[in-house]
Amino acid sequence: MGIKQEIQSEIIQAVETVKQINPMAGSITNSVTINLVANAQLAVGGSAAMVYLPDEAEFLAKTGGATYVNVGTLLPIYEKTLPHVAKVLHEAGKPWVLDPVAVGIGSLRTQLLKQFKVFKPTIIRGNASEIIALAGLWELDGGTDESNVRGVDSTDSVHAAKKAAIALAKWTGGAVAVSGETDLITDGSIIAISYGGSYFMEKITGAGCSLGGVAAVYAAAANPFIAALTASAVYNLAGKRAELKVDGPGSFQVQFLDELYKATAEEIANNPFDLEEV
Ligand SMILES: Nc1ncnc2c1ncn2[C@@H]1O[C@H](COP(=O)(O)OP(=O)(O)OP(=O)(O)O)[C@@H](O)[C@H]1O
Ligand SMILES: Cc1ncsc1CCO
Ligand SMILES: [Mg+2]
Image (cartoon, rainbow, N blue to C red; front, side, top):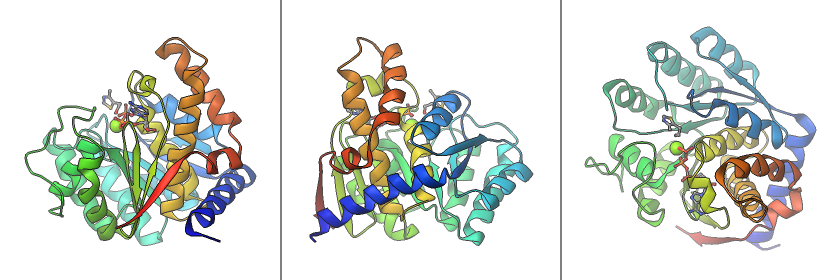
């Protein structure tokens, strides 16, 4: 079997395992997109639970299959919850996904994202500007201090974040997923470029956040690279299919959840992707 076929069979296994075991992937996430994150996790076969408090996050981290951490809308309690849960996850060897939303804005966000470096998130998922800025904050290759982050949306191309993504993956020993018109997923030694999706994904909020939540669901059942690639593949497939059936962002979000739910393991594995050695 070639490397591509091997990866496709691991994607099939990840999708089927999730549907069988219904893994809990708890989230500490932002208040804008929290509902879409939970619904997307359920649509692919996972379980969702959203919490804010340190002891509740610790409980989910220890008992769940994986955890999703998103710094989108910080509140004072996150100063306690987030470093605590990251440490618990790291020490327990449990998979977790970090979404460094709007890295560079505000002192608490910067301080928290700096602290995560030593806790090595299993998957880092962000848009290109966020991945470049996080590599900068962690003083890794491909990062920059003069970040182009202006808010939650990307101003950089996915290709421009390649070096930063590789450096972050090498540092964590996990995977990094950069989202955009095409998605780049790497474990630091191999790169996958996943195709599909829809321009409507930029017209709803939370396509990226929910992609991170779904990556956490798959991380409960597969290695970080396969989990991140499977999540991108199902998003690209469902986005492409939903776009054909709708005429605006509101109906797109609804149809997108239906397509996430309907996609089969084989269809997800067959969604187009290319591979490159680093
Ligand atoms: N122009 C596009 N064409 C096709 N797919 C897209 C496009 N833009 C984004 N996507 C897809 O949308 C999903 C989310 O990526 P995006 O880069 O928009 O995340 P994000 O900026 O972090 O989103 P958010 O912060 O709103 O959650 C990914 O699956 C990505 O492939
Ligand atoms: C719009 C927005 N603002 C803070 S978090 C968030 C969701 C997309 O990242
Ligand atoms: Mg985002």
